Image (cartoon, rainbow, N blue to C red; front, side, top):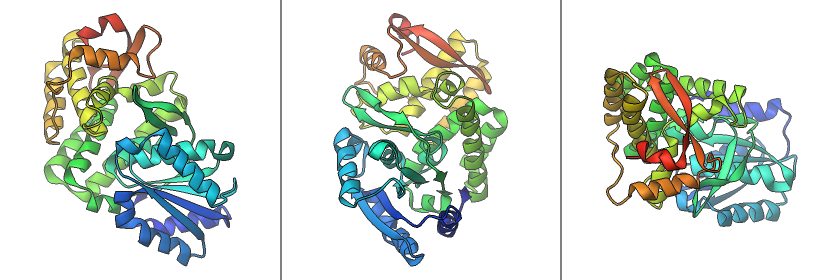
Length: 338
């Protein structure tokens, strides 16, 4: 569900599935400080039993150690398989909580309530859950679908502008995949910042990702297209030791693959300019930092979970709305990582 102020809709949904168990709400320290009190109060006022926990905000918390803390919290509160876990927060919270829910007692139901633009259009859709390892992002995880997702855009009102724009990088990626209509709508929003336009964009992004996921839930074929900009982006993020956020790294990855696609795939130069123009409206950096070398990036890519021995799939752009998967040997990556 996409809309504003969705607490009543959440409670109505829980009643519709005859839920009468316990709810564990997991959030990071930033989101908990803003929203946990009101959120918990709404649930308890509806007669539900609620326990809550928070962990330190940031990608550095997306680890096996934090995962273990969440599992122990669920055990301490005697959460059973008929109970529900709610992830209230951004992508880190969703990935962590989803992984815990997937593995706790071999699976407990969970609901996602994303609070950032990035998590609304990306990580809350598709059932990917994971934690990071020192060698790279999301290397330990599983596919596990939430039973419901409530995308409440009112949570975006308190989102820092830079963090909001980091999510916009993922929105732009979806526009490149979908076509010029969505991409132009995104461009118009970045110029005018109308809230009804934003809700339409989020809805279109969710529908678009949902189409890919429905056809290829386990990322063996068509869903790979959603990695547009991410192979280079994840490597940049990892090499920066996560001083660059996921959204910042994706913006860099999209810029890089746009330049590469103009050269190798003969994408029309005017379309490349359109993509760069929209990316520039976010105010995010688009160049690989000087302290990250080509060799560092290629080494990081070799640890990517999408890597198949000495080859990896790169998503290239033939034209806006027409992208394809290209298998590249690790030894040949220098042409793709500049």
